[in-house]
Each structure stands twice: as structure tokens, then as C-alpha cells.
Image (tube, helix red, strand yellow):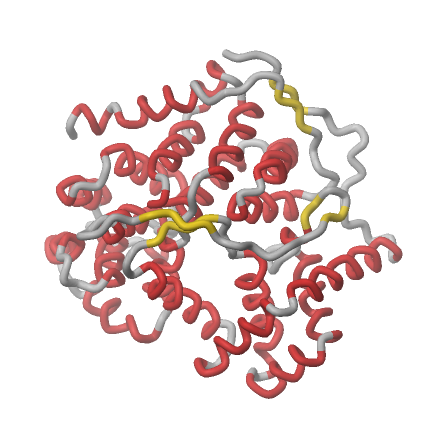
Length: 388
């Protein structure tokens, strides 16, 4: 591999080191690891820097080194091709413990990465691509084609611009062997996939970051970002557009948008919304089988309040890919094709009601003394008081 490839993340580390600020002091939130984890990603999506940093501190104090994998996944899921330089800096800082210790320490690095990811422009196109490629029924023929092709044929398919993006994604995934046991393919070769990206003109530090992230996370979404970068920059100039996000309120300084389908209290609140909101309940009873109604509500709430981005990379094909990924998720949740649009519109119109129900659910849980939040009076304040 060329020297510029080998030096790519070294340059990213140097840029990251220049970003450390002085006199940072953050109090952890009084919540558990699950809510902190959820908040970290949703706050980054919304560009809510302060909430993202406090969530990072809270999660780091409770789960330690697990935060580095979370940062890598968030960088590829939610920033991706919109800011490859931030993705590279995130991977560089998250995969080198010795560098973190020498430069600013783990806590300072976590605070810094939370800020950089929150402030960066966003793209969830990689997430939509991996979701649709892996699960949508219309792509089954491409899944069969890739699984029956040789390594050389799949490598060629990655670079063939006339192929669908899902075909190229599946070919890259198959050749790479990235994934858990059930996803691995004999004769796989991640280096060949990365070399193909290099030949196609993907920026060197994004390629190196993708390789490190794929190995450390074992998540195939890492391979989608170079493909999205190629698609977004092929015959066009992508741009970032600012987006509106739903309003929220806080409880114990935790924004309510963190209480989504990835937290126990969030799932309970969504079920309560269905119970209290006659429009949503009636829609589900009319359109969704009873066994799937909770899953359908969880997913609709996610797209209404947890998935929105404060900024978005716009490119020809992005909106269609988003619709494809969203459709895949909703179909898998049991919502019929013809009901997806109306159901999402209905949920988006009821985010305020969802937040009211979230508050009610939290307070009811407290009254039953089940304990939602940590009592964190003795949790340490995290201070970064010098530039290194």
C-alpha cells in the first residue's frame, strides 16, 4: 500500500490533537448506561453538542472502553460520507489507546469526539444501504447473484458503476468477510476490497479508517461509507443542507428523544402512547397484525423522533436510498407497504404527545420505586484542565 495510505491516519491523529480544548468540566448525567448510550447517538444526530458530551462522559464512566466501538459505529452510521475527515479522526482516536494516553487521556478524547461528531454534517445513507441490501425482498436476486459469484467477479462488481448500489454493497460485503460467524464467506479478502476502493478514487484516510473500523467493529456498515462517497461524488457535487428536528424537553437534564426503542423505558412509553392515542391505536388496529403492532410503533417512533438529522448530505440518489431503507425497516416491523407513509406522518404529528407520555411514564415508574435514573451525587466531575 502506498505511503500516503499508511500515513493517512497519522495525519488524522495530528488534526485531532490540535482540537483539544482547555478547562473542560462536565458533570455526568443521572441516568443508566442504556439511556446514556441512546442519548449519545441521538444527540450527535441532532447536533446537540452539550448533550452528546455529557452522554459520552456518563457512558465512559459506566462502561469504560466500550465507548470507542460506539464512537466508530456512530461515525459510520451517522456522519459517513458527509465528513470523511471526521470519520478518520474518530477511528484514529478510538483505536489507539497509547496515543490517547499520551495526548489528552481517555475522558478528554471522549469529550472531544462527541463534540466533533455532533458538529459534523451528517449522512445516514450507509445505514439505509446496508439495511435495504440485507433485508429488502426486491434485492434477493442480487443476494443470490453475489453469493454465487467468485471473489474476482464480486471485486469487479464493486467497481462497475452500471450496477445498482445494493449490488455493489453486497459484493463488497461478501468479499470482505466482515461480520460475525454467520456472515463470513470462505476465501474472503478485506484487503482486496480496500484496494478496489483505492483504485476507484476513495480518499486514502477514509480507506484506512474503513479497514481499521471493519476489523475492530466487525460491522459491515463500515464498508458502505466508501461506496456512498463514490456515489455522492460521481458526476455531481454533493452539498450539506440544514434540517429541522422535532422539539423536545428534558427530565433530569436528559432530553426525551433519548427514550426511544433502544431503551426499556422508551419502549414502555411508546406502548403507552399507543394506548392513550386513539388515532395511532386505531391505525394500528386497522392496518397491522396484532403480533406486530408494538414493533411497528417502536419503528415509527424511531423515524419520527430518533432518526432526524440537524444537517444532511444531499446528493442525487440520497432521497431514494433513504426511502428504500425506511421502507425496509417499516416492512420488517409489520407495516404494509401502502400504510408506511400515512403511519410515519401520523407519528411525526404526535411527537409532542409522545414526549408528554414519556414524562408520564418516567414519573409513574418513579412512584412505583422501580428506579430509572442513577442517584449520581457521588459520581465524579470530569475535568480536562490543560492542553497537551
